[in-house]
Amino acid sequence: MNLLIARLPSVAKMLAFPTLLLLGASAQADVNFTFTGTNTDGLVGYNIGQSYTFTFVVNGAFAVGTNAFSTDNDIWQQLAPTDDVLFSNFTGSGIAGSLTGNPLGVVQVVDNYTGPGQDAIITQFTGASGLTANGVPLFTALAVIIEGGNITDTFPGAYIAPQSVFSAITTTPAGSGSAIRLTTAGGQAYFDMDSFSIDAGPAEVPFGVDSSVGLAVLGLAGAWKLRRRKLAAAQAAS
Image 1 (cartoon, one colour):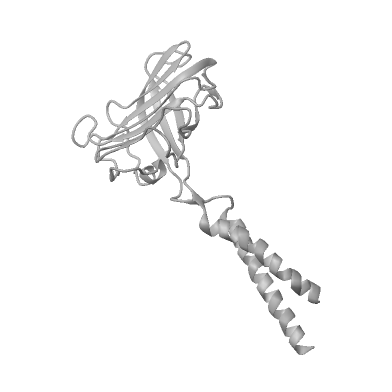
Image 2 (cartoon, rainbow, N blue to C red):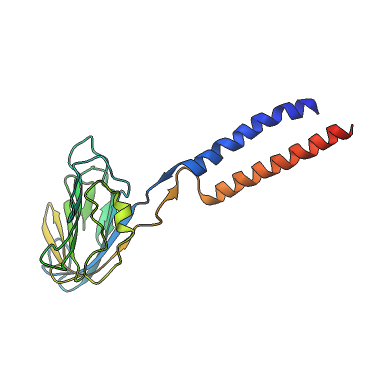
């Protein structure tokens, strides 16, 4: 019995470690920008008048880059090899492959882009992407959203994570002038944007473990405490 009791503190340490991970560490969720647009040129395998959907997946915690923040502009830019990766993926109609080329990229929120009350969100990556559009190598994907109302952005004038900004933005219909452009080895394809949505996930998510694991860890810790009390009571009675 004494040997078992002597081992219990090491069990407690094992339980405490993942509990600390659960309580002390977190990460921002990715931000998904999904755009639906009507093709206007019939190029690169897309059909005029047909609707297509594309999704940019942005690193919600992007921090190390050529960023700029002011009272009317938030810009996150990946321009150097040492920068964080801004775009983790790009998917959509006719798009194949995975985003492996680590292309340059920018995500921007602009207050009064084309005039008062006409705010904009711009997402773009450029460079070897590892992706194809209808079988043709894709080099650039650009989407410009112009909203008819003000975007919910406090423009703090200092660094703020993309996820923190976009989790607060309410999706609205795309305004006049909103568009999508794909640039490939076989030419460019243009789309008038019909709608868009932003999924920025929860404000924070556990890093390394999920909530079910956390509950299991806390449950084990409680069971260990109960076991220790029973052993102590048995020792006192003997």
